[in-house]
Image (tube, rainbow, N blue to C red):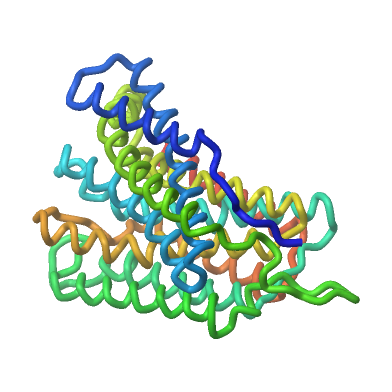
Length: 365
């Protein structure tokens, strides 16, 4: 039974407005760590609100543009946080964009996907899903990952793990084309590939969730989304000394900052995926995990390419040997998990084990 989005609760507007007020009060000031911690919590709440408003607008617009709006909103948050930190300290953040995108892939494919399979298979012995859609998404992810994050480590036209301007432009265009092609397949041409497998004696519906909201509700969400995005990016700038201070104090690698950004950005999608898995909707969980990974690379790489060219920022895109090993292992295990169209508890534990090893190496390389 479908339900309609009729109104928005007051907190969906109060939180971003409070966030903007705090941003104005704390901008360009030296703040003690308890206040920075509080601002960080407000930032996380505002990310949830921004994603909610984007979902409301996406429902009103419909597919395929709805999916793009949601992906663009999340990308604005991710890119905004990356660029703010890069402008603060260009020399120490050469790897930040690369590390954040790579962390997003590891979180989505091992953390979210593995966690979703674990939740589902603890309740039911086997998790069933449509291989046609998820395997296609994995193929796009493999191409995007290797072309954008591995290839720069082996090219010789520019020093270091970097692309020349022409190579970077090609990678950006290719990433965007692959992502848009996937969106078109997911939402229009082969939409049935991404719907839950039909149950016996039931009629499958491609619209079982919510009806589109009214125009007035959608317009309110557009305003709420814009305010939320401004607040998130601004608070990332204000509260960044907290993360950087913890990293420096404990002697952690800079990769910890990238993982923190990716976790904050992906937190709403993670919770949605785990909830879907707990309700038995494995297909929805996998769609969220793979879709988040694809958007992180397919939209972030072009955005970073444009921003770095306009602002003259140097960006290292090529992964190191250890990260390449993790990426190849992740893609291989994901293929073995998704191709059969069914998974057990074992596959969930394997993915989570890889994710645990990744986090260990991040903290102790």
